[in-house]
Amino acid sequence: HCPVGALSERDDTEQFFAALANPKKKVIVQIAPAVRASWGEEMGLSHEEAEVGKIVTALKMMGVDYVFDTDFAADLTIMEEGSELLRRLSEGEHQYPMFTSCCPAWVRFMKSQYPDMTECLSTAKSPQQMFGAVVKAYYAGKLGIAKEDVFSVSIMPCIAKKSENILPTMNDAGTGRDVDLVLTTREFVRMLRAEHIRPDLLESTPFDDPIGEATGAGVIFGVTGGVMEAALRSAYYLVNGENAAPDAFQNVRGQEGWREAEFELAGKTLRVAVASGLGNARKLVKALRKGKAHYDFVEIMACPGGCAGGGGQPIKDGLEQAECRGNHLYFLDDIANLRFSHENPAIQALYKDFLGEPLGEKAHHLLHTDHTAWKMPRESE
Ligand code: SF4
Image 1: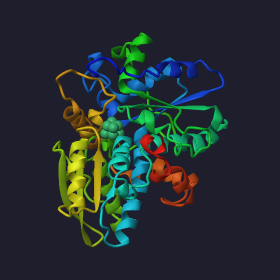
Image 2 (image 1 turned 90 degrees about the vertical axis):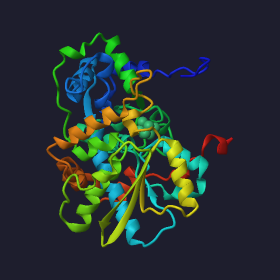
Image 3 (image 1 turned 30 degrees about the horizontal axis):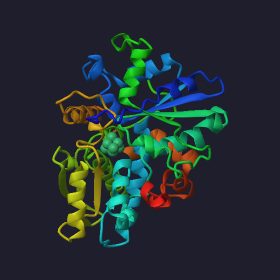
Image 4 (image 1 turned 45 degrees about the vertical axis):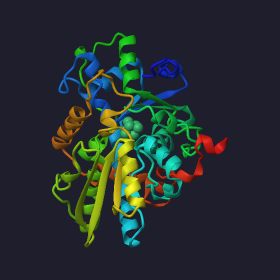
């Protein structure tokens, strides 16, 4: 919180209710992985009680037309980012590693602090933005409606996502914005209260089809190390044609701000690192630039603990909840029917029916971005 009250939290819930009241709009909502581990905290629900299906029910009670799981797009991100990693490895040694790009605060940090390394960021969009592009460019057609008539909303653990969706590069479906509105977990909880919805009385409703199915690999995107672990599961499959054990890459788990591990992949030793918190990110990048650290693939999340500890999550003064929420996401992965992104039948169908191949022409247009194609505010002054 700003100590002098000069800053106040932006509330976009009015725009959401305005879209619901517009009969011309189909309102489609996606729910990020980390939201399911936190939304019940302010409502007095345990993790077991705060099922994600109850969020679906509540949104439908408010009048939302379709509700999907951002975890689906997390699986899609893995297909693209894992393929990008393998292509990069096949090119031989690089001075710097490939960095994940799904955290918009980290992308901004890299662009502003180390602009000469911007091109080391994966070009894969974040799951939020992949989902937005797929909803408008693909799902609107499935519904038989114009993509301009879709109002695409995301519920995120994150405040930085509110600046990601308005980037000029996040308009690949050609409607102005691929994601029209970003709401935080806190805003969602406020809407529940405003609508007098009692979560303890809700039943669970499944996500809508056909882009509502997700794997455990998508769920762990919400915790530090989760993107790395999910990517390694699928990269191993793409190289070897068979799966490793689902937990084979769990050495990247943990809450330490900067962790590293090595795995054998494609006949070589893959050196990976995971950092969360921008102070740790700076230390890691400085070590790379001084030649004191050498990695092939690095995951960075701006918030300590990853999105589970995101800036849009419920706040309990003096109590850090990221680890506890992250553990719940690992539990959900552990009990998931599918734990590998490449085994998600909805993802396989999307590539077969619409996208073609990972890194193919259509996937490149809709699911990747050019981080150098927009300027930081100070640069554009
Ligand atoms: Fe947003 Fe924080 Fe997650 Fe980055 S780590 S995407 S800033 S919630």
